[in-house]
Image (cartoon, rainbow, N blue to C red; front, side):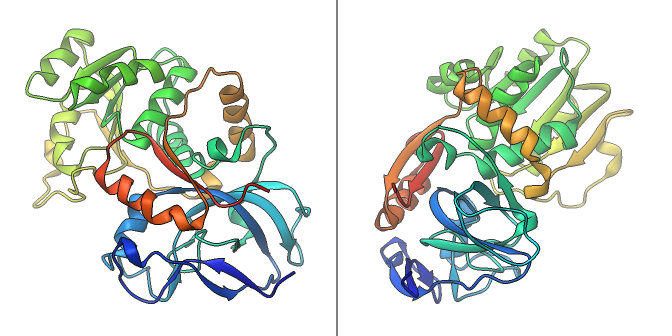
Length: 331
């Protein structure tokens, strides 16, 4: 094996043109860690933020970006129960932030953050899954405890997590109410599993109350913290709202008054890790995708590390809903 690999390693903030490859040392495996040959990965908003130098204190330069990856095991350290050539997924755990990430031919991660899987699905499909599937699955199970037959509002339905959460909730047997600000994307919401696709404007509260006069059982808040008061008001007593993301950039509520939470309504949050997507759950979702009973929306596929800049451009401009995936290797 060559002692170097191709990677996009940033020494400081850059614009899109600065996402260029260079030769860097292949990471050496150590006890408890796994070296993965990267086959594909999704491109995420947090990586755009990191590239621009606007991440939080858990991020530092120099850094290879990329918070998720799928690929095959290349080498394992002592104490790791995985085998060379095994297909695996990884995400979070400081990947691309505290440690070098997936914008490379190889990445080195802790074994605790590695999920083995088996599927004949293409890397362009599997590469879309780790982060958005972990977040959607975790927010629905841990954040909401959603049960079959219950109703759920997905506020921010055309985000990648929103689309995936719709598909998972539909697969679970829930009644799914999903929102979009763009009427042209209503059909997409129903295609992935929404029973009701609603326009997110001033008519939204009345539209939801017409569907659920006594309140919705639960909701995922993906739009922003400043939308929580309205979302909480639409939930029945005993129901739950889980705050997951802030598409509008509002992550906090200034001068928050807990008494704005309606009596009996629960408010939770979810920000998970790889451990929150057990291999059994990933196996279940892969079988559902193979059977075309769970729909994953891929906005664009890019071939090779040299196309990462194009993927960043398209993600920033949001021309199409869904996940942007880079297939780093076709071997």
